[in-house]
Image 1 (cartoon, rainbow, N blue to C red):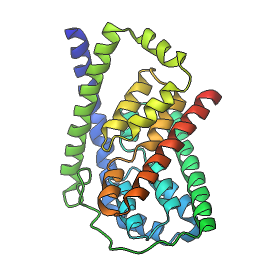
Image 2: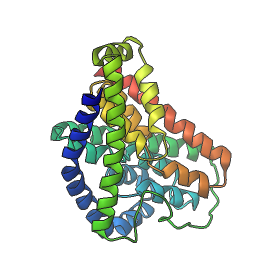
Image 3: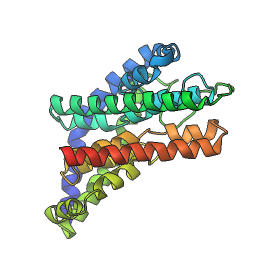
Image 4: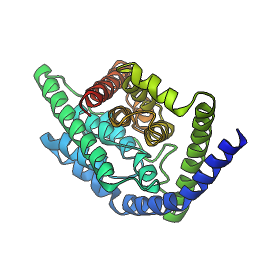
Length: 280
C-alpha cells in the first residue's frame, strides 16, 4: 500500500516541471489575447458557434466563465455558449502535455470536441430561431470573479498557483486510483467498465459536470490509466466547463433555463461518448 502511495507521489513530482512550463505558456496567451478573444466571439454573429468552438479549445483561463457572463447579458447566443462549453477542456490539455501524450492524440481529441461543439451550437441556434425565442438583455457582470482565474495576478504567480493546484489534484486522484487498483486490480476494473455498455460514457459525462478542475483531472487520469476508453473520455471532457456552470447559475437569473442548459450539456456529452465508444 505504501509503495502505491510513494509511486503516486513520485509520478506527480515528475509532472510538476512540465505542468509549470505549460501553465506559463497558457497564462502568457491569456494575458495577451484574452480581450481580443472575447471581442471576436461578440462580433461573430451567426458564425458564433464555430468561433466559440475554435476559441473554446484554446488553453485560456476562465473563457467558459466569460462565456457564461456574455450569455447572461445576451451578448452571445445559446448555441455559442454551448459550443464554448463543449469545446472547453479545462485541465485536460496541460495534463496530456505533461504526460507526453502523442501530439496526434491530443489534436484528435481537441478537433473532435471542436466539431461536436460547433455542430451542436448551430443546431441549437437553428431550433431557437425556429421557436423565435426572445432574449432579453441584462447587465454584464465582472468576468474575473471566480476561483479559477487570476486575472490581476502576475503571469509567474498565476502559473505557480495553477501548477500547485493541479499537482495536488493529480496526487490525490493518483493515490485513490492506486488504492483501487491495489484492492480490485486494474484489469478487473477495466473489464467491469467494459462489460456494461454505456456505463463509462454516462459516468464520465456526469463526472465532467463537477464545477471545478477536478472533473477533467479525474477523466484524463482514468483515460491515461486505460480504465475508460477514448470515447468515454471525450464524452466526459465535453461536459467539463471548469467553473463556467457555477458562474452561469450565479449570473443568469432564469433558473429553469440554467437547468435546461445543464441537462442539454450532459445529454450531448453522454450521447457523444456512447456513439464514439461504439465507433472507436
